[in-house]
Length: 308
Image (cartoon, one colour):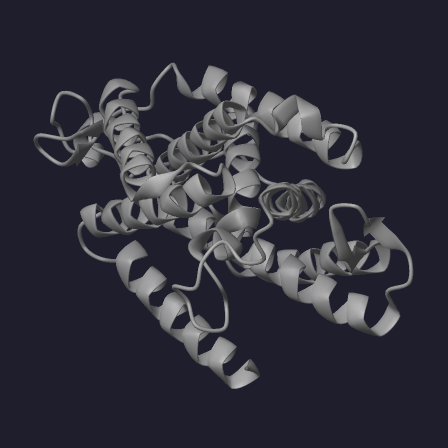
């Protein structure tokens, strides 16, 4: 099982990096669309949507919303496959995502008492749409932000490190359950092990890249069609201190646990162990990206608020 997990993980990482650093950003956007729609299919099972036609209808609805959001929030010119200027809608969208995950936190810590509030099929469908669309907006913003490729790698790596750190520390030292009703296997010791892992990794990112993160151009295409070099020259990022960077890394690692626990809570409600089996040894798409569904929106809010 471990060898299978490692082999699958290496394939996923390789494909992810190839798409992220491809010459055209369309490849990465396409991969994100495929992952989110696959996650939508799996979420339809968590929401107990009946029948193949019903589940496909949910996926189609999510697909239409992905296109609508990308085109109308000023992110992507779908016809020309161009990335546009930053939208005024990002800030309210990320604040809404922040409120969504605050609500998710309350529902998680109060489970099972909270179950009647969200267990209806319609409520779970709405929650799935909000979660997936929020992830989509945050992914687009992060990828097409200044130094976006680095930031995407950073978030994914911090979340992965937190997951690995929590697993091994929890196995070795875990005694006190984190939220036993939702996920009996998670411990407080494991949670803090994940935070420590993020803190050990953060200085590596900082001293190899972040400390010297001053650039003169933004890797976006202006709405007018002009190149980034000609329309946005002279833009610089603010200085980023190591202390603040480590604090943000700890925050990203912490909130990634919310995505994991939120999916676990819905699995318990629907009686599902794994969201899918598309990735051998890893389960479904949601099982792999659950931490990212909370980490990316919160990080995008931080990124926008701090002006990095």
